[in-house]
Amino acid sequence: MKIKINFLKILLIAILLCGFAFIAKKLFITESSYNNDAIAIMKELNIYDKVDQNKYSKTLEEMLINNSFNSKYVDVYTEINFVNKSNFLNVVNTLLEKEYSASEINMILANLSDNNIDNLLELEYLSLEDFYLIKNLNVLKINEYNQYKKENSVTTEEAVTQVNIGLNNKYYTNIIEVENPDDLLVLVNKYRALPADYIPEDLVSLSNGSQFQLRRVAAEAYEKLIDYASDNGIEVLPFSGYRSYNTQKVIYNNHVNNNGRDRADTYSARPGHSEHQLGLAVDIRSKDYELKRLTPDDAKWINENCSQFGFIVRYTKEDEFITGYMEETWHLRYVGIEVAKKVMDLGITYDEYYDLYIEKH
Ligand SMILES: [Zn+2]
Image 1 (cartoon, rainbow, N blue to C red):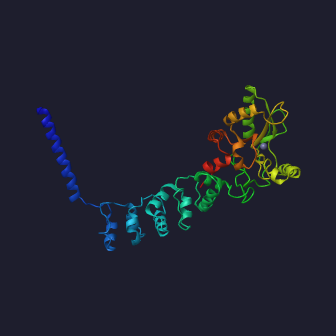
Image 2: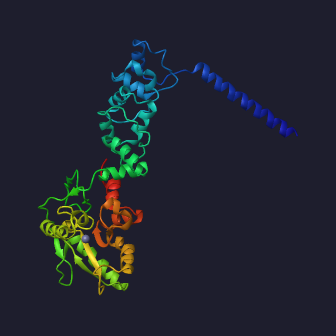
Image 3: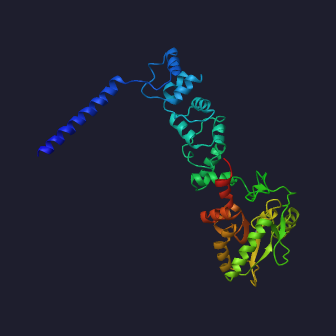
């Protein structure tokens, strides 16, 4: 019993001491963390009393000592988190002039790329509420995203990626010429063309005296893939590899003459827009299959195994609305093992993958 009373006494004293310490701190310790220069400027500008000296703000301090302070925003500055970034003060002041709130500015600085922030400074105020956390956001396209969302039943994330790909415009409009045709990860589609004179420099023939060629790295990966397939009882043969711009032109025009342009566009690429011109795409068929394509079983096996050799199945059934091509189980594109595994695991098109993980925004 005695022990218990002693314990309670000690506890009571401890609580009282803590209480005193807390009150003493409130009453006597009002030391500001602002540096002397900032305090001198506050006094000179007659705002020292307006600023809560107990609530240090590095943003306010930097504004004061770097001659960027605007008295209109004295209270707002203290709510903006300081970010170590070369044009931070200018960004904050410009966004405040455009009437962004402190919390909006904090979200912008914490999440948007430097490129997007630079572009925001040139634009009128935009509501970014739905977009802060979208990694492939391009603020120049906010109106297009919103419009696309209205017209299609898609999430904001899908709208951003699909507009970035170009899908809010018709296929073969707003075409850009790719700058890096030799890059193994280059994206070619109905909005992105290769130069007509692009020919890869390291084309090699596939084995067994094949008339088909691929770039060396893709050819080596292809041999490994078909050897592994063969070990598993899957016998496949190539039926197309590298195709020049002019070959593609002849093929495409033939299809147009036979089936009309609209129909041809669903299965044949216009010249400059074919992955075959890259020397990184190969078409394969099952040996002894009368349709000269992959049997459903072989297609399934290839789909499950090609990524470990660096290939992806580029045109899938569920993604026709993105790629603009009918399903092609037989068309494999080389992108290297790491990227191929990611694309196939994510179950997205290379167009989407490129925008989400390769393109700089
Ligand atoms: Zn093909």
